[in-house]
Image (cartoon, rainbow, N blue to C red; front, side, top):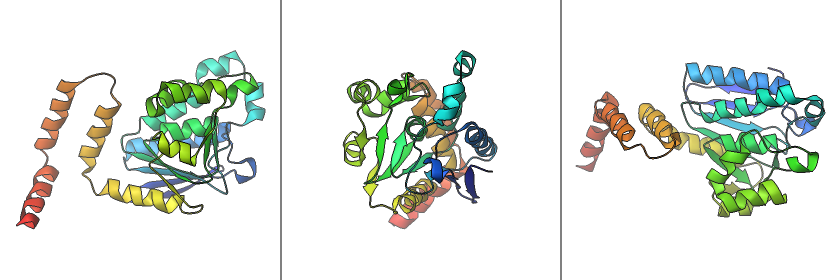
Length: 242
């Protein structure tokens, strides 16, 4: 890996974007390497924690590369396909955000299930100022996260969300001092890992499914009711209560 640092632990995958001199701008090589990470997590599901090296999460896509892309590259959905794949990973994902999460960097964070931020964090999608749109997930994912009104303020009016605004609108779970975001994200993954893996996988799958799906809920619950993990966990709870 040239653009990522990977710490593949037994209970989580820790990925750090490693282009600090470019504010971790997402280029084609990073996209390719993140696809490799996704393949590993699809094969061996575990939570993902992703952060950026240096002061920033990711300052956007690589503008020099974007300038040379044409219609065919846009129709291929290069970044969108990656971020959709991140969003579809089987286990929960956590983004630890400091500094800039702009453009494609913001969209990568939106693709994660949970975001924790430092008070230096800034989320934004300035793509229209460069003659393009936020087309790697922000147009449909951001309004699900913060609501249509705030999403349009970001996507159309060029509003940036600082850490306080991101916390108020529910984009981030918490705001911590600079340098503490990765540890805070690990704490979240620790809490996630205390739950039953199959229950987490099915909960995420059902939560991400569009529309109302009561029968799918019933079927997923039926699978969990028959699991050994459910029986053992409930037995331990009842015995502890005694």
